[in-house]
Structures are given as structure tokens and as C-alpha cells.
Amino acid sequence: MSSAPHPTPEDPFSFPRLAVALDGTGWHPASWREPVSRPRDLFTAPYWLDQVTEAERGLLDFVTIEDGLGPQSSRFLDPDERTDQVRGRLDAVLIASRVAPLTRHIGLVPTVVTTHTEPFHLSKAIATLDYVSTGRAGLRVQVTARPNEAAHFGRRTVRRIDDYPSPAAQEIVTELFEEAADYVEVVRRLWDSWEDDAEIRSAATGRFIDRDRLHYIDFEGRHFSVKGPSITPRPPQGQPLVTALAHDTVPYRLVGRAADVGYITPHDTGEARATVARVRAEQTAAGRAEETLHVFADLVVLLDDDEAGARARRDRLDTLAGEEYTSDALIFAGTAAQLADLLQDFASAGATGFRLRPAVTGHDLPAITRALVPELQRRGAFRTAYEADTLRGLLGLPRPANRYAATTV
Image 1 (cartoon, one colour):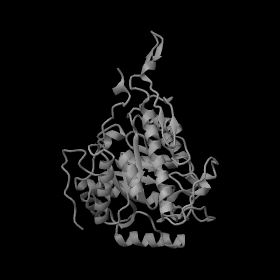
Image 2: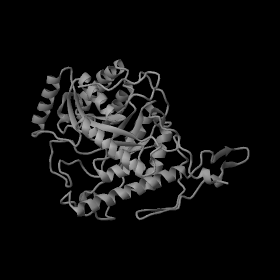
Image 3: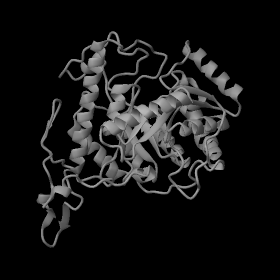
Image 4: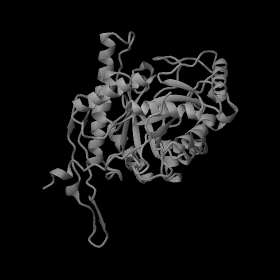
């Protein structure tokens, strides 16, 4: 497997970025049965703090935290009755807020389901996270077409997708992602609804805010009607990071139109190159060709000292689960050096970063931070120290100007 050209050490942003996706005890459904997994601690703050601080120890750019509006299920659309897999979650935004004051550099990107939640509430939650973390917040946008999750809220029904490739199913998917795009637009406008210097806080003059620097957003769309302004001042980053996972044209369009980072799931270098090109085409179509949009390749990883050991561990986990584990993303089982080769190949195909999904968090997260990261550093392909204090800074993204301040006379 060939290696991509090494970046120049003088440019701190020339190497690919690296994130980790945290999901319970790991992405393999039998991960909770491993001795290192600590399933009894899963719903405690120290458990999550340990995962995030381990990722920060490895100088990773950010972690994402999975979430949902219904119990996990082995079925695409329906709940199951299984009792041999992890079920139940803590709220991802609240986990991020809990660990934020106890970390210093790593970005915190909780998953948010847009389909049944309100952009006004989410905008202030992520703005608050940005304050609590001093500029390290983001969010991962997710939609849901599960009828049982719609039933939790009782305000709308979601038409069932019985045949995914059918025109009717594509219409449902398109509608959900168009709603998500409007959702992100509302959130971004609310973040800008306070100008940066709207707060005066002058006890001497008795003026706390300059009301002329708070703005109605007056958003009117098919899915939302939101007046604004927010109740939370503009976040430290101005615009916290917006990210989304994409598998096909409609979600690629969401990434191209609304995201700072898109996650893709290529299974080889050729597919990576083709998928990056499709995302870039949507970015151009959205009029954002001159903006920085990161494209991260997602991989499930099982890392061990030798390839045979990694493959044997995967087989053992599959046996515990009673079936072979499959994923939307490539499942890699091998050594840190082999994974480094693969990442550099994907980088040569246009991926600007990677989001690694540890199969067993207790095993594979430390393997990422203590084996993969040093291997990449030896190749000159990863940072040796954090070079910025905000998540946007780590990703080489500028702090955006306030859209409403530009129109103030």
C-alpha cells in the first residue's frame, strides 16, 4: 500500500485532521462484554470524561458523541426486543457540557437530531457549550425517519420508508434533509443575532447591552418560522462547528450547503476520490467553493499489535454477538502502521481528515492515541502539540463575520 506525500512540518494545517466517534462502549454491538469496557460505568460522568481526556491526550481535533431519540436497535426503522446489546443513552449535549470544563483543547461535537427538535433550543444549547468550553463546541446534524421516534413527540408523523430506492422513499429523505438544512440556517442566524460587542456591562452608566446590536432574524421557511433574537450572546467562535454524515446525493447536498465538516464512508481509495468529488460539486453548487469545507472519511477500527490479533478479536466479538458485524463505514482490523498507510492513501484521494469509530472504546481508543498517533507523528503526518485554542482554529477555519453587523449603519 503506497503512502501519500508527507506534509511539510512548517505548515501546522498541512496534515489530515483526526477525530473519534464515541458511542457507548464502542461501535461493535458486543463491545460491552469486553473486560475493558466498564459497562456498569456507562451512565456516569467519569466514564465519559475518561474517554474524552484520552482523546485529548492523543492531540485529536475533536470527539463526536452519538445520540438519538429512541433506544438503539439492530433494525433500520423499528425497535427490537434484544437484551444482549447496549440500550439507553445519556444526552450528548449534556455529556459535552459536563466534560468541557475539565478539558482544555479538544473539540466537543454532540449529535443532535433535527427532525423533532427546535432550532431555537439547540442554538442556545450549543452556544452555551461554546461558552463552557471556551470556544470548542460543534454539533453533528442527524435526521430520523423512524415512526416510533415520531411517536415520542406526537406532533407529526413521518411516512414510513418501505423501499429505500423508490421515488416515494427518496421524496421522504429529501424532505427530511431539506428540513435539516433550514434548521441549520436558523441556528446559524440565531448565533449571529447578537453582535460581538452587544454587551456593554457598564455598571457606571447602567447599560448592560446595546439593544441596537441585537437583531431579529425573521426566518420564514417551509419548516420553521423564527423571529429571534437568541437569548444567548454570540458564541466565542462566532459560529460553532456544524458537521453531518453523508452517504448519498441528498445528504451530500446538505454538507455542501450547510456544514463545516462532512463525514463520508468510502471503502477504498477510488470510492474516496469519487465521493470527495461529489461533495465538492455540491459545495460549488451551493456557492461555497471559496470556503473551507473539510471532508472526513469514517472508519470503524480494531487496532492491535499484529493483524492476526486484530482479526481474531473481530471474530471473537462477532461470535459473542451471534452474527457478523457490518457497518456503513469500512471496518479496519490491523496494526497502527497499516492504518496509517490507509489514512494517507485516503488523504491522497482528497480526504482532509478522519473520524475513527473505535470498535471497543476501552481497547481501540487508547490504541488510536498511543499507537496510531505516534506512528503518524513519526511520518510527519500529525501534530505534536495543539496549535490553537478553539475548534475552528484547530481546523484552520476563520472566525466568521457577523452577517447582521455588516448591515448595521
